[in-house]
Length: 206
Ligand code: 5GP
Image 1 (cartoon, rainbow, N blue to C red):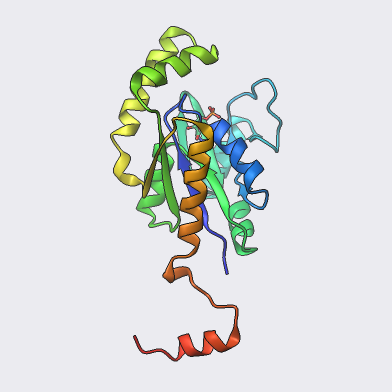
Image 2: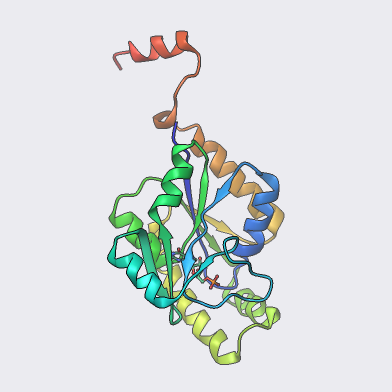
């Protein structure tokens, strides 16, 4: 059975990176999609681990050849999910997390891409501003811009199946794990491994 695509988004500063790190620790079998981007690596980021860092020309070549399932321009840089990598992982039956911005999610929804869509939200705008200021990586103008972008993104909340308010990492990870567990037990995904039960189910009429 193919793996489950888990699409995660959050307004900048909500704490998605920390949450994903904790998720990896709790579910070592979970795969994470490695996007392509034209932005420069930050300190501590590794090519092929955090992103595939590529030049703009190469990115445009990939879009021309339709190699991306989705791509978006975010803050002057391009980000995209290469089709091949994610299809290979899912076909091996591995569940896969895709960390996308809201534009990417809109693209996937327009393609009726099947998966579980989770939106991580801050407890309040005040707290979001505090977290953005606290990480000290953006200027006050950039923080203002990120808060405005965050508001626009939050207004698109209907694109998602689930909302998780990120008060503490532990609580949010627990909620995300519960969502994944429940989604994997959806009747529409049920494939009995026991041949006898499979036979009974396949012969069912309702
Ligand atoms: P950052 O530059 O901070 O790593 O990421 C900026 C934004 O780009 C985040 O919201 C992140 O989720 C989003 N992002 C990362 N990879 C992709 C991708 O492949 N496609 C889309 N649409 N967004 C992405």
